[in-house]
Length: 538
Ligand SMILES: [Ca+2]
Ligand SMILES: [Ca+2]
Image (tube, rainbow, N blue to C red; front, top):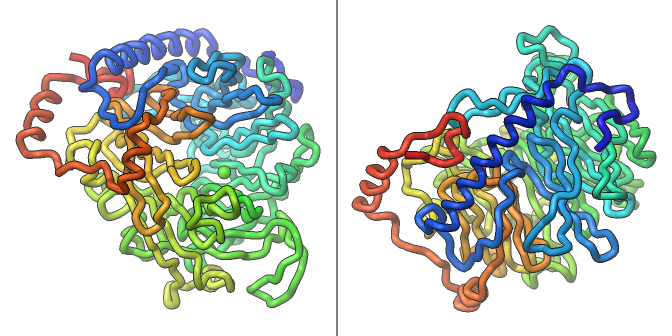
């Protein structure tokens, strides 16, 4: 894109050469991983998945979305590097079209972009951060980029404009990108908001709901009392060059048994319900149309600023190891004719709990994929929940890689920074879910029976740290912090496994095998120049 982007922002303070050199180094590293992954089966555990290609230049990828230009697909990839557009004219071989770099996204006063990683498993020193679940407007060909206050050495705890020991601005908000020509991406504007971890289109992208992350010290206190994190802030995007942030009218308050807590992300279902996941659970809202508000009994118009509660709630301690409903990260509610048969009436909510606070419990006691019944939640119950009178959804099915085929040995050894297991983003394609589990790779689950999700395929390279995996056409594209984008395809074996209604599942790794892995691991050392995760180089 052009270096100047029309709103008077400059990146004079940046060090573009440093960034270029750094990216070159990372690309070489990624290529080495690719070579080894392809030539040495020991570095990638998989079943019923064909590895087609890896795009190592997309290392630090967070999310992918797709725009359809009259039957021609373009893949938008976002992450610490900013935004990259790829032609999918040949879906097996994506071609880079254009990019908006981390340097391009710097606001006045931001410390320069610096991808240096100082410790194995650490984060780059100063980059854009990081646009999970990137949303796009298919109609107007817009790409929305949420800016977390942790961008460019920022923090969640300090306020924008406050003295900062790192020189960070701590600014959150949303960038709007015009992608009418995907080979010439144009950054139109930036709207500063009190929130910015994720941003999601509601009402056909005429409005945005932007949530998270954790609150600043000021926000935690009166008068806001955002004790457990930042709620949703609404932006009017009817004029994309001039978005209007309704910064004083937060939505989705009091979500954790009456306490305002982190509203992490939103997914809108085929009925138009906006499901907000976060600390305390997942709750759905009407944002348009006339509906009965179960909290008042009134029938009124729902709007993005005054939504009407629909259903949802917190998740049980048995799945989340939390008394407060779990840290729900993202969710999907399949409904209507495109949903798998058992889901068509919209009875079930699919949700990720992200929790790896204690790596020893990751995926075993917490951080699960849960399928919950929405029964009993349609009358505002989750909005009335209190610590004394908790409302929780009933979980009917659950899955995690713990003790499943394809998983790493329990207790390690793991690469630095990847010593955890948790559910993360997933994509529903028919009755199959493509599911990212960080260090446990992408797992493909047959969810046709909500009570028994079953693994039918998996792709777990040893160097993976995968954040999100997506179906598009006949392919699967993954956003991996270490590897970049993996292009995958399910083999006929996946369908055979589904038909057999049998989970691909092995006995837990034997003690002998674990000793072997531990011995192998001790012969390798993490390469600090490559985040440790890039590959363990002898
Ligand atoms: Ca979203
Ligand atoms: Ca938990």
